Length: 259
Image 1 (spheres, helix red, strand yellow):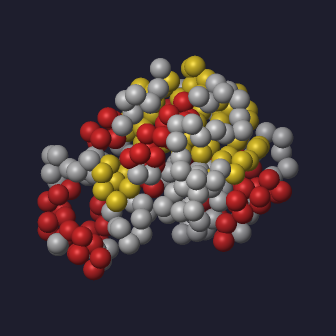
Image 2 (tube, helix red, strand yellow):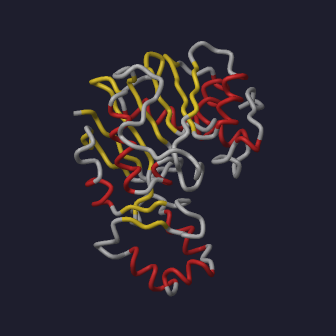
């Protein structure tokens, strides 16, 4: 792959700053291919995509590789990034919106998210709604509110896909916990009482429903039990199609269809 053709200033790459620009593009390409594969599509050339918590990696991937795309709407709580994308992406297929919704990590002064939160978009107009590294930072009430809010924007035959942290090790995949144990900190020692106690809790058949992993960094890691992650979808207007193990580019991810 050649040099990145559409660069985003590092101070605007909040979720991607640990990767260089080319790594972010590669991840974006892989996520786009993952969605096409999961939805039985050759590409996204006929798809209208809503990317919540968009960041910049999918935009960079589409632009870098000139990937087929119907239409893309990126929504984010970071106004500086949205302003940059609106000014720099000169392509009628791309649109961007700022949403001032609260998130303890990324937008602590924002307005509370609810099922009544509205986007400036037509309802039932998207084939795919994606949220990568968004539910990984959502508390349970926002997990439910986000699903309810987004339900109105999906087409009857559309899908939603989102990544999340599950409190389980996954055979054949990479576990979030591998890095946690390797990089054990004094603060984690205070929370869990010790590494052995923590490992035992992860291996428990009935892990806690929800864990804000590091209270000193609220919702940097929002961890759900599998049972709770599935249960919270109930009553949101969606039904679970699949809850998938991690792959190289993504943690666990869930796909739901509207009901």
